[in-house]
Image (cartoon, rainbow, N blue to C red):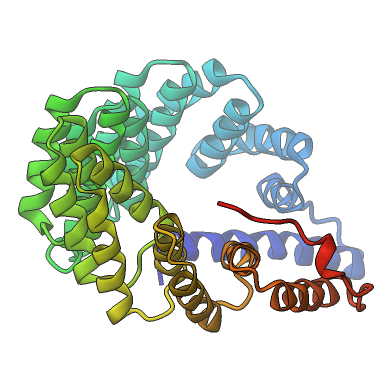
Length: 365
């Protein structure tokens, strides 16, 4: 069971204990006062922050050794917009001598959040790192460190933190693809900002980790395209088509675009056909090939591909629309009428009036 889940269950149990304490005290007519700490936890469980703040203040007045109460109080101050007050409280806690490492780790984690809220990112990074160093389970501190590094666009530091997270969970080797895809996502962000040089450096690292990852290949193709290396982009994206059946329409759109720029657009027909041989009826590939054949004037062939795609994806809006267009273009108005009426009956829940062939639009291109 994870540390976070244990803490969460403990919080619920303590809050429930506060309610039980109050209930039993009332039943017995006892004068025993419910500890303010328990009242604070019950208020937090109920979402009553006003009462929680009040009872946490009472708690630390009565028992200044209750570190959890101080931490929760500071977190509430920060959440309610008073990050400076939270920082002062957490800093005072950190200065206490003889504090156990697990508690110091929690305090440093809170200080990291305080610094971040006060727009002191470097101080926040230091606090999160210190929390990770001190904590028996540094998972939360590392996740907060990673999130801040990502916000600061410190890609190399974020990558090292990501590796550390995987290493500590014994997943560094088994989840090499995850690490490579994380690096590729960083490169994609750099490409969007126009930093091709850094993106290329990062992507070369990703390819060393897992050069067969579809995400890495996809981003490598984007880089090659941006650098004017259209054959390189085509090679990278064709490798994806050859290795997986899970492909969306954007990859085909990218490939069409680059083949057009490369002067090899006619080769798209073979790309679609090769992919459909191993993935018959694939929605995006069927639509792309049918559209390609329509441009060439091969209407009957395009209809065959469309209908094969509809056999696998009968609800596809793109394929259903293309089927209707192709039927009309082929002059098969009676079939188009039937398809249209069946579709309307399905969508409206009732059969519409019969459409006359003369009312159907003429498609010439």
